[in-house]
Length: 247
Ligand SMILES: NC(=O)c1ccc[n+]([C@@H]2O[C@H](COP(=O)([O-])OP(=O)(O)OC[C@H]3O[C@@H](n4cnc5c(N)ncnc54)[C@H](OP(=O)(O)O)[C@@H]3O)[C@@H](O)[C@H]2O)c1
Image (tube, rainbow, N blue to C red; front, top):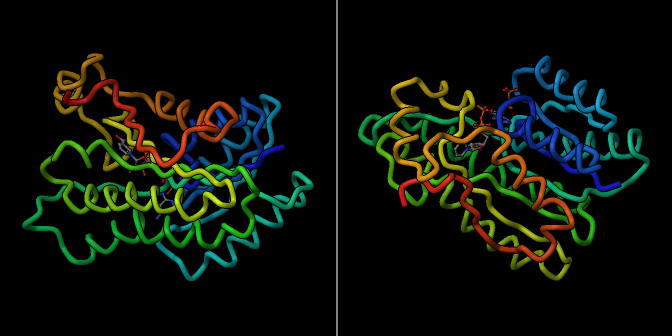
């Protein structure tokens, strides 16, 4: 059985991705940062529908703990699935920030950098020894890398950096037949950045060709596809999943 790690699997897109992966027969190691109860609920739902999942604590901004996280992943692989390797890693966990460029603080800037670029870089480096031939990396980026959206400058810039990093991962890990792709959501109804209010949602829906904002499962299905056999010839791509945002 292929086992995948999904960071930020306690809610939103990551939780939905965990459930979609489990439905496709993958084992899921999902992580949470501050909410073990929600993570446990996702695990329970997966177990109740016949899948297998484990929740581990991880702050992707805390690189100093990545070695112990790898050990926890190794232990989970052996005790829950009786295997030693990973079939995929999804860099999904993180937070958003709405603050105009002129008032962003250094701490806010560094917080976004650590979570959306530095953390994913070193997490993949830490987990690479566990990744099997044919494994799949999925990095969550954002349509704000394509459409400049006032108030999210550092977030969008680091997501743009992650898109570039995706292609370098694909290049350097290709000899091991490890693929890397970015999934770039448009506006999705989750709790990111405090969630969407009605007025903002109406505006975003009017800017989207399909006339609504996305749901977590709209993105989760694409993540699960990229982690599975159907995605096995897709590599080094940024796939926008936005219903046609600002086209
Ligand atoms: N929603 C959108 O409109 C949208 C659009 C474009 C891109 N994205 C991207 O999609 C990904 C998922 O977003 P979402 O909308 O599902 O967000 P969400 O509903 O706010 O969920 C965020 C998840 O990330 C975890 N998390 C937060 N900070 C973390 C950290 N420092 N280390 C590890 N995990 C952390 C949270 O864990 P706890 O709850 O346990 O703290 C939670 O599981 C993010 O990378 C986001 O940038 C979202």
